[in-house]
Length: 419
Image (cartoon, rainbow, N blue to C red; front, side, top):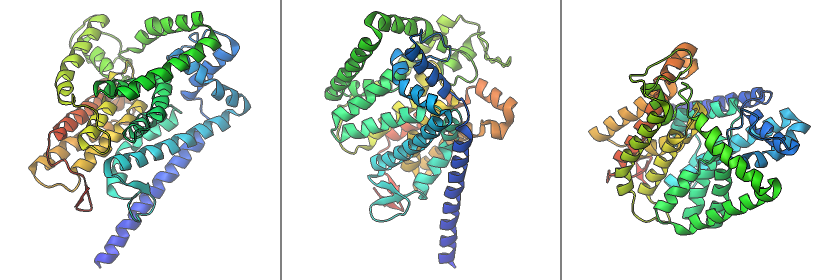
């Protein structure tokens, strides 16, 4: 009887994975015919090929090198718009698979497999499947909008993995490309700098310089400098907006402390401060909140497996969307690694501490997931976003990670066995 029950549960898990797979296949086929954010990437590359000002297009909010690196996408789009989007979405899924696989290697020292054999983790193991379900909303958001965020997360996780394996040049090349395109991995590079991993920082800086040398040759130095000045002084400040879709810390503070329009008339502000004042208040809050973690994380970078250092990496992933001037919902795919790690550190643990921790964790997951349009409807979902539910949920994840950082029993468990 118990054997039959176990088999039924296993079949149920595989049925669930199959359903997720069908949803992803449907999403890829449907989204391949959409413009999505991908159209902005195409427009950026077109501007380079046509010799136009890359920032004439309002969709282009990225650093100048992004436009240059988008040129191959533009060329393939001219051949087949549907085909290049299909390839992009398929590569996004492969990148997500690689992210999950790297996560299991970093956290459990085991590779991911469809079948649990030897020193592998099965795709249907609860410690993999449940975090994937909790993050599934953001995977769909990235596919439906044809965005680049999955690749940015892959760059961060892959670069960290390569660094602990002492493949510094590979990690440096990846990080430099990511920084030049979307800036996000800069926070990971600053983390390495703070941890006094000077080798990877210097190599990444060399790669960034080389990429800019190439860009200067292609565009001309005067034009490249002009583009960077325009991006920094004009484009970037405009990104800091109170729009309720912006779930970054800056967006939350603007909605809370200013009369900036959050759209749809959904004001929640308690003060009416100027935008510039709110910006400096946010910087001050971030600076004060960073003091304690900066003291706790001051030890030198350690190569190899280190659970506390993994928690530090997870916190970096949490704060990347929070500290961005603008963070749409799809940006919170960066929550994958924090969710995966927190679930692993609290899995199969008993006691009041872990019971309360799990309650806090699942409350943050409720905020992340239940605020979606499909659960609340468009109107209530907009109100939830105006109240910054994704921002609050991410802050809760950061708090949980800091609590676990000082927990001596933060040992990973697989099937009641310590890892």
